[in-house]
Image 1: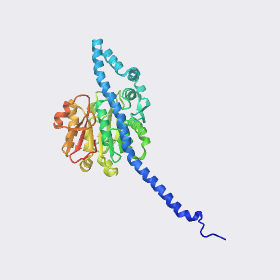
Image 2: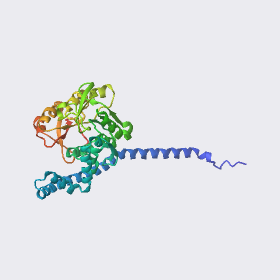
Image 3: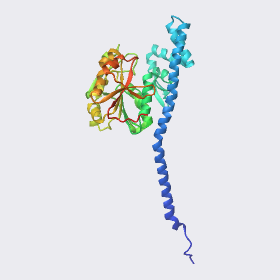
Image 4: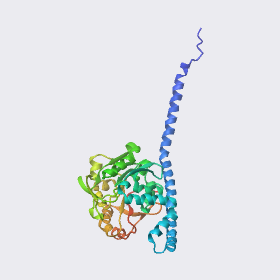
Length: 369
């Protein structure tokens, strides 16, 4: 006789389903929460690693000054040996290997164009040409060593979030594109030189669908343009012929307006644009007038001092200033500091080979810390 009071496993089925669904719901909530905090954690980790690299860099700068003074006293009148002794004192045995690679690739340019694997300061593999790799990895810990690049790296680490759309115009091998993608931003990288673009595409491949790479120059018109390359450095190119002392090669490459890319090709508009196109910055901006005026992204421009800056960089700066932007320099920690001087006075007086200036629209509320 069946006991009606005895409960079978079937009687517990609704409870089992409820507990199972609750378990899945909890896992989903926890996973979502972890995903939401993962980007700041990545940024914090990157910033800490960049801090370590920057501190090393700044210490090297200070040490370089003192070592240089020591070398001048020890080896008076011997400039080559002064420089060599100074760098040995700073970088130690690493400089010997770096110098060997440097001079071999100068003597044999084709050897310098061999693609090798290096690492960024956050530990990701990066493909780079041998002649650039020797300083990138051996001396500067997986980051560009020039001081303006250090400050720009800091700025992007402080500013970019996973909600941003980062346009890298003149992306080269993709260092800044990789950094932005690592943080979680959507990235659009533009590089017109086919050989350099192949390196860029390989470096961005692992970041998947949130990265778009385009083998085209951004310019003031759609169509094709001539691009000029120097004979000894194929990772640098320009559409402004006058910026090169010697021309080694000319290429015909596709050209695209920023407005066309966003409005006609239906890409998300940028929140941050970095433009480094060897003097053609004003042409990029002219082709993106509608995007600049309607979406007011943060704009970072590489500018040059002296007469070249007066002729090429000042027009780009004034294009933005006339549209409600304000010009800023980056301090040692990558924090924008407002510049009150007119662009026509400030830019030509800059020291060094180049500088990165940040332009913020007066309505911009940035997330910089």
